[in-house]
Image (cartoon, rainbow, N blue to C red):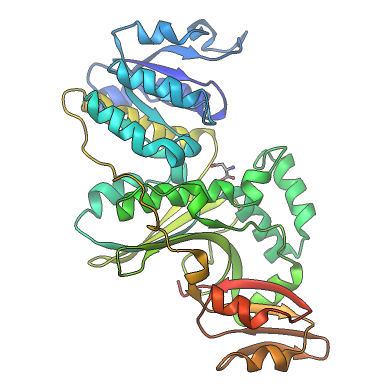
Length: 402
Ligand code: HSE
């Protein structure tokens, strides 16, 4: 069976290599007729590359070839990925993507288009890179009502926070190292500001809770404002600061969804996820908590998930895999103001003034000119009103119970 790849970057080249390297294994175990890359669509040429002869520059070559049944989209970005994927699906080809922006923004529409054309649209690599997450949710955990999903879904920010926690390294220095190692982009905004993690939690929330969740409905904070002082107080409290993307059912048909730095207890399975590794915790009403851990980025780990989807498509050319979610609905994600959690507050304000506005607080530090405390659970709205007009609040960070 023949496959085309659109976008020959880090992931696309990984997919080409993975399918070639494991050709015999895949043929013997999964797809008896074999899986071969026939075209690689890219704007660029790749002289000297082992796949140089497969490079094309025109989508029609793929669309017009009836032997290409599966197309991999690893271009990234929304446009023209959305248009190209739509055209492939409409021409009767299954599509596999690693593109989280595409799935977070257009997943509902593309799943519908796939259904209308009786083909598959799969995106295992779009959330946890090489970590199996989507198939476990739609298959292995299908008998559970999932009540909560929470994860460390961005390797770059986790690498930076790990440096801050383990080596007392300031944010800017850690970011520079992440960039020099190729983890963070030259413009690291999407990673550092939580945008990448937001797209991923949107996809998980849609799968777990049944409706499309758009990134703009998800409160998103990055890690730029985390200081070494906060890291130190988290240690004193008995935990670490992680960038947590989470979503949970509220019990009345709505969900919460957010991305923000958060205090995580040392005993939590998420606390030990270090460096560029990712993890996701799923809370099911039958299974309890399950945690998935592994490499959330990188050429071959991501290619592993893409290639697995390609194999699944190859095994389901006659019958599509039925999965998806409903359209988005206004108010499905509750406003962040209604989100309830304990919070860590640090500052040089009048500690007693801050503490006395809550029923009880747990002090981590209460020294002249500096305090750090944990509040009882409060809504964000309540928290804002209690801190309104108080000068000298340094940091406010969510505290989790994972
Ligand atoms: N920039 C992302 C990360 C890559 O650091 O996790 C995978 O989405």
